[in-house]
Length: 111
Length: 114
Image (cartoon, rainbow over all chains, first blue to last red):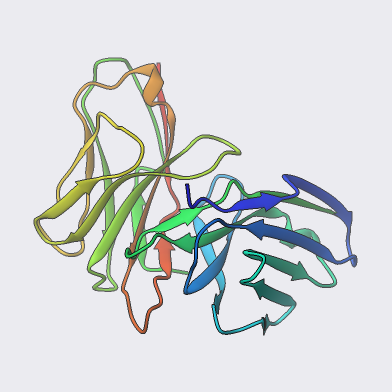
């Protein structure tokens, strides 16, 4: 299976702290994406990192990609209660535009 | 916010009823997807469409069917709902540009079959 696996499954932090989530995948990819899902809602695309990039920033988000280890991390700095959500990594299937989503990390930011 | 809409948002229905979950997008995307997701769990692809009149089953076997008669519309139908169909159904669309395959999701339909 090419499915990504997020780690940890759940993370609880205080407002203002940084949150780091990790994703591992199994096959070669040309990009990796991170999505966010608020409870009971659809997913929202956060950031895409290509296989030739090592790090990418978007606001308070920082994503890294290590293709040699087949892993990625999402860092949310100075977290807010509004960041409480589940975060999923997604990788493209070989030769397909379909995505494979991981099981997600449930982040709780306590005020 | 993405321009992709799902109706209804919530549906409670009895066993044996026929239901159709609606999904429409105004972005002109050629590819559309249906996912099934139980609370707190991962997404499972149940249907995929490359374009008009082109659909295929996803990874997770589903008794539902889909149609794609118009680019913007991708409804999902269950001929006879059962309690095992209780889940959240998410519709998404994408346009593959420059090797990107970003998907845009609707808000989902939470289905409960009694």
